[in-house]
Length: 256
Image 1: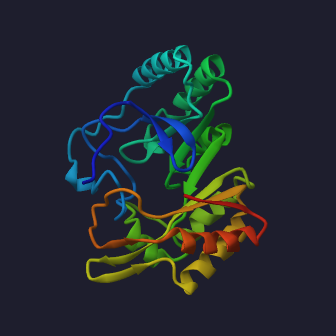
Image 2: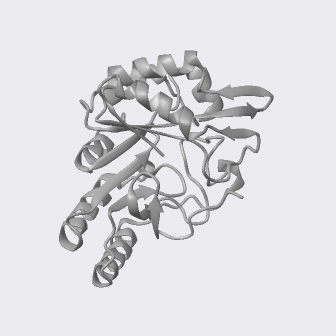
């Protein structure tokens, strides 16, 4: 069963990709707010959660994060990473850059060895303020699930204009200081076959990865409940084979 995050700060949880992760949710507590409506999203469909579309305030985020970090450090369990994720796309927040500034200052004060990560679908990287903020964090983890617009429309369901080529050009502008994250899956949605693991899909995606030249790639598959019930998890062995092809490009690739 899909579910929302019910607070501004959540966790810490043991992340498959990031270690002991303290989550930060800038999105509404009682609803989902995202520029994608991915068929695999653990938070469910956008229109399943039509509540108030209020972002969490910068002051509330700063206060709650400071209190949590102070407590965790006092308890001897500081986080490995502070991760911006939550009920949708964190970079939609109008004060995203300022919140990142606050977070970096608190990280330096309370737990300087912790990393700051942002999980983003990359739909807002046309905004200079978002790009500036992402360049400052330790791990800006940006989504690219397919090299084909048709597959993105089926799997990610962008809620506005989206172009793979335009997104790739903007990802290239990070000059390697980014992590590309890709969900691999197969199944059916609305009577259409979904599969971004075919040779055609993987080869085209690898060419874009070569072009973007990120410092790292993360590949993963389904691990939690999804709103579309007809999707299939891609097993680790197959993910490792894809990762090996990324590594052959000279780019580090992790499997989660």
